[in-house]
Amino acid sequence: MKSSRILTGLVLLVAAACGDSDPNRAPTPLPVVATDDVVVVGPITGFGSVTANGVEFDTAAAIVSMDDEPGTVSDLKIGMVVSIGGTIDSTTGVTRANEITFVDDAEGPVSSIDRAAGSFVVLGRTVFVDGLTVFEDATFEDLEVGHVVEVSGLWKHQQQIQAAYVHRTANQFAAGMTMQVKGEIADLDIGQQRFRIGTQSCDYSAAMLELGGADLANGMYVQVTSTAMIQNGHMLANMVQARDRDRDRYRLCAGECLYELIGYVTAFNSAIDFEVDGQAVTTTLDTVYVNGTVDTLELDVKVSIDGTLNDTGVLVAERIVFHLPSLVEIKADVEDLLAGYDVVRLLGIDVQTNQFTLFRDHTASGPPSFGFEDLAINDRLEIRAVLDGDLVIATRLERDDPHDVVTLKALVESIDRPSITMLGVTVTSDENTVFQNAAHVEIDADEFFALVDIDSIVRSEGTYDGTSILASKMFLRVCLNNCL
Image (cartoon, rainbow, N blue to C red; front, side, top):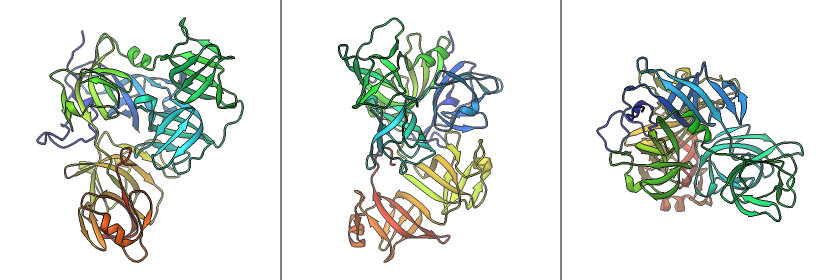
């Protein structure tokens, strides 16, 4: 039997801190202590090799699979949720990937969009976006009903998807293009030869069935493929295939293996019987909780888990890290770089980066590999971050093309009309400032300053003179869907 001691250097510590003195702060990863097979499941956050869940894998000998077809590392994109099977060298600490598997959740036309909720629907699956969602060839604001998108994400309960990667592949669907959705069958009608995936009706009367000898049944997890236009609300299936969403994860695990998973609680019966991203999880009396307790576990809570996958396919959690909300947004130029500490300074704010930060270059000539070492003074960055005590820790850092307007969203620390202070930065309004309440309704200055309070969330835009921001916009916001 393989060692049950988890490789703590692999745990995803979204609120990664510098020590263990604060019980609400994620511990510093320990050195490698064992040689084991390991499976990591989560979004890709960096290249140069492949980084997922804070683990950097050497990919020189990796076999890559893209939606069941042979692929290469160059086919992978930042944000894609992948399963990586590999090994750890206990002498060198090097982690090597043997296999990398990517399977998307849906590809098809957008049927509706809810801007306020930060969501859209594609082929019956409700897809949420947040500050960590990576968009390719579009932004959430660019999406329109009818656009064709490919979605890769983390499951929430009721088959909802928290998108990690959204690629707009076309402005409209045309016959002959492929649409595809994965999910559990509901409302199976054998007479009509129809069933539902999410809210999408699927007609399988002309479909080839690949069910592995089983019969169609409610609750069966399938992949439905079509190349025809949706007719009268029905997706006309060419193929219905039975799938096991965790098949590749189990296959990558040789016996009892180390297992790293990021996801949302998708089913919850008790602390010893719940699911994360559809994966069965249990805890023990020795399970360590970070940023919460056992009582914090509930549906749709985002966690990172490290543990061992036992012989029955259940993840035995050694540590559960509850993700902190992404309260901070900064768009500004780099003022300084503290290379020895991986700290970047913008608007006078020191932002810590680490191995868990998603790095992406979004400039016109951005390199495929991008990390802290590629940053330079005056680079334009967009950062999403969490607050861990006094630390501002970047969950996502993206380099963009130059822009004169800066953005700062954070908790209000003090109020002195016409100014507020956030993260030590004074933001001042004037007669030209546009105000909004939390419902995105424009209001006047009197109403804004009557509503704003200490610890309110405000998103401001304006010009920065090196010490303070003159705001063109000051918007009250609430933390919805991880503070989009």
